[in-house]
Image 1: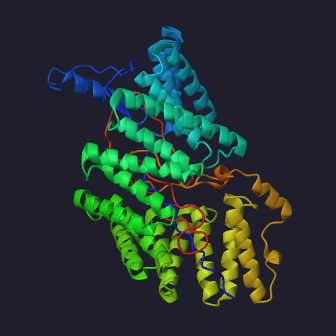
Image 2: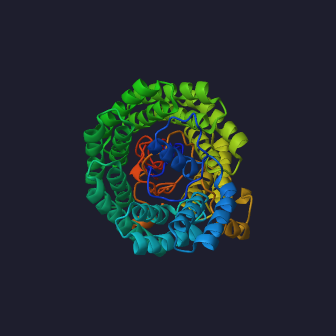
Length: 505
């Protein structure tokens, strides 16, 4: 009896963008700029430009290079202005942001809490800077379990409860100050909806996702980036809930608008093309799945190059669509393209390389080539053991399938293991590396994710809060759309486990 299909899609996400930073306003610490006699900008535009230029959110410099500079700036403010001066608190919040972006969560959390306490005391609960710090702390508590910074489930539960309380406070304050249609209120609802979904409360999350979309349409029309992101997030929610027919028209709406505004070969347009391919594959509409997956692959090869990680993900997903359509001989060379490219570009122990070994092994098993299947299942097993841990379900699943394949040819998989039990225990204690996100988009609302195993009772990533914190400035700056949903969790398309390119912005 053959293995049930369990093809792994690519953990590809568009930008898991931050909350939209504020423009303008009350934060006092700004870089000084000499005024040019020829400058004809209005004072308001100058102020906004200074805020954006000095915001750690807008810097393209790696956070590890910014941290010493922000530490120095904070030290100078504390020395010359005092611990509670508004400029000192601004510098402290800026340092917390870059630490947050660098995944130094413990120190960032301590700084956020100190800033929040002092701003509540000095400015009050409803001040825009206080609300921004609430959001920063909430997003950190929401996201800090991602990647290598794994924490116990009971601590994670407390963090999520605290994040929910802070998100609700942010929404209440923004609604009172700006109204239901203001972008800060919309972003706050998106954050809360993503958290509710992650904590296995889809019945509470869905109305919020629909409110976000309705408010965005009412405020901005049908083709604004914020509206398209809201439609994408709702579509992903519906798709992950198995409601493919409801999700399809929303995805098509997003694709039509992005194609019109950005062009058919823009990465964000191609991203939705790939999402639709995976959706049709899940619906067993194999002709459309292959058609859209090929369109995404061709566009990415021409715009990004044949070795770009996103292109390699498209190789994998196109092979998945052919595999699901039982076009095995056509699928094999594309699986090999993805496997060889990922081994070369990402390394043999990267999770995506492990996925490619697993997918190729699955194909060879179904074709009856048990020797090649067993070898690739074992390669997947070894890679998963390194990057996910010996006891991770995917690691054990790959080992079980390797043993099944070897039994078909009279061998014992355990006799060919590359490490013994003591090595396995050591690997299991190693932190899991953070999967690289193939970010393609502009900053938007935070992502939402399906419930994780830890929250229910696991994603590049199942935590849905913003990847980067929010800077405090005065009125929200429209930089695009809502943030994307994270990649699909275990289960879903293709039967068995599948990780899809369905994270949406």
